[in-house]
Length: 227
Image 1 (tube, helix red, strand yellow):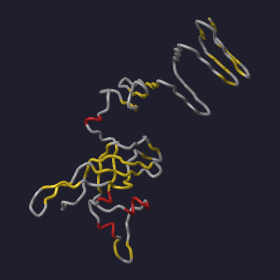
Image 2: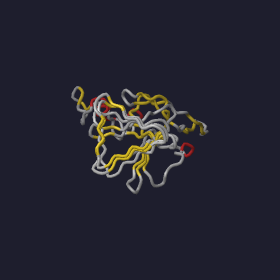
Image 3: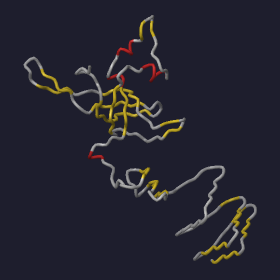
């Protein structure tokens, strides 16, 4: 049976997020209504729940993290059973204490056994320019920074500043590659090797420059450089 004081599901708001352990101080966003001896209704403002665990999408050692901020909205769920053994010790059973079941197993829908799911937005915080068909990983303004997965299997990465790939080895395998550069295309390397079975064409309105500390190799059935 669910009692009047049981906590089941509540709207909440992040007060402080602690990235080191992925917990947060969370404000319960609904008052409690109660009646006094004269049967007059009054409101009681609920407080802040400290260090509530926050859900982070994870699995197999991989995680998708986001910069949770003060004021972010969330939904709060409360466990049917006290979960101290699971939360603090990563164990599947609570066990006993001095021959008796550990006290936290007696809790049910208790305020101490909640967890927060960040990202359930209020209507006033609805995502702007939400695309009805593409899957997007984006910031507040999708025109500044976004990764799009389109229904036609087309993938787009867009940034208003810069895209950086850092790895010991980067390999791109494709049938056709096109680089449309409005200003300058620069490649800095110890050795530069451009090899093609067919034709290689370099065309620029100004200067075409290729520089390397070591060897520069350009090979193909035909090579055209048109500055």
